Length: 394
Ligand SMILES: [Zn+2]
Ligand SMILES: [Zn+2]
Image (cartoon, rainbow, N blue to C red; front, side):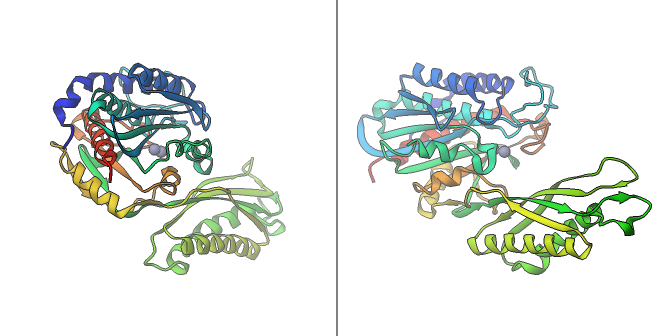
């Protein structure tokens, strides 16, 4: 293997320092101005040429090796979430209501760590390494992968392989997890507006109660899972947001439901949308209300790891001492990294950070999400080794 722990040791403090800085100053989707300026400065300091404002606040660095080979892209997302941090660390978020609760701060620091190793060893590198620092992964279908691709991030030079790493609070520390083929779901977001007829709470028979209809819709939607979609297909429908009413004795005119659908193939995806719409409309109608169902456009596809590439990635990861690599189950979570994988073969993989001894026990997106910083160097090492191995001419 190209790089081992001895190659990363000198950069470990810097990687942790970067992570803490970005953690303290989190920025929401497409607002990563400070983060991207910081990333560009760090790359330039490593003598890596940089393009800024790629697809919004995105940054692309290009490191040329000394021999011909493949162009390998490594991606880190940079945005934080609208969450108030509930972890007491010295580098706690200074921006109220904004937190790196998905760990994208660690992605930026781990990728910069990989850039440090790779730029130091550029004389031994074949091919080119493209560093993709992406805005707005958390923005759903409007996430930053698409505008970066539209802005030419995967061209000039054309990317041959693309890789992404995500820290996860659902695997033990120092565990890499991935699988060949489909890895993460396709998301669809729905909004159901239920329109009834309001009135006095004491006389519901005079009204068309949208709250009652909405409650029936929430329950009935689980019938899509258990009675309408083939049980052999992974599928989730969740209502995550419910709003209606103003006062304790007024039956309101309207109720609003919002939620998400997760699927793994095109057929189930289109069936699911059809059934959700039908159930919402027909159940509402049964209770004298009317439902309007909308799906957000431009949602991204399933994240599919190239099987041959993934096999090679697994063999590279297994050589990193002190870590373990497992083949994970399907994740019902979703990633707009899937858009990069539509442009070039590659793989997306996780690095676990559960460590009860340090209180790192909560999952991503939790206000108490905490990362075991000891794992960051392994993330950097994995990215550097993947770039090195896949850069070799095939
Ligand atoms: Zn997230
Ligand atoms: Zn994330």
